[in-house]
Image (tube, rainbow, N blue to C red; front, side, top):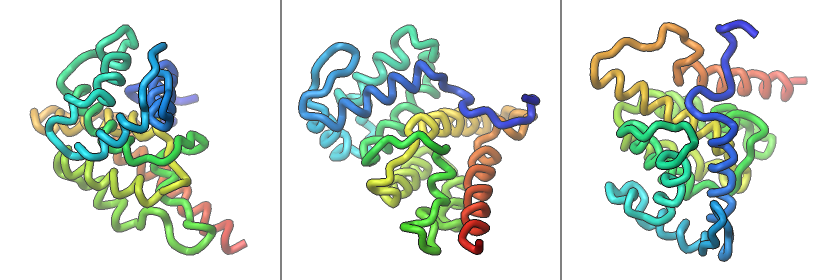
Length: 209
């Protein structure tokens, strides 16, 4: 595999995926276990939804339970302001995800056809607006709308999380005037566009056949 081939994950790894999967599974249950402790996951999820887009989301138990395992522990994900902010966005969005489906990347899921019809879950225009988000709040709001459109079909949580962490890293670099990664396949806009448009085109081809 050459260095120009897009990798599945940039920021996160398989250990992080396991943590995210377990955390999300706990949120779906009245008595769900995470990190060996039993929680009322549905209550935590409801609280996260009620506090959606709040600057105080980091005070919610549902957030701190994940943060303590994913960032404040030995998972090799450094505790930085950028990672803290990225996790806040992810938790905001994940609270509205109905199911975890990891067969294809998140952006590819957005371009799938609704019930085999003509429309994508997220239109090309809305997808381009998502990529053009100018700040974290705007990015978060558009992601929430996108996962709501997926409904029961769910999304690839780890792919979503990795994209959010990468977007936040790139946004922080722009804010400081730092140069972008010279490898385009490590840039979120390129990675998501490839997943979205290749899936969209393949779906169109299959429909014509």
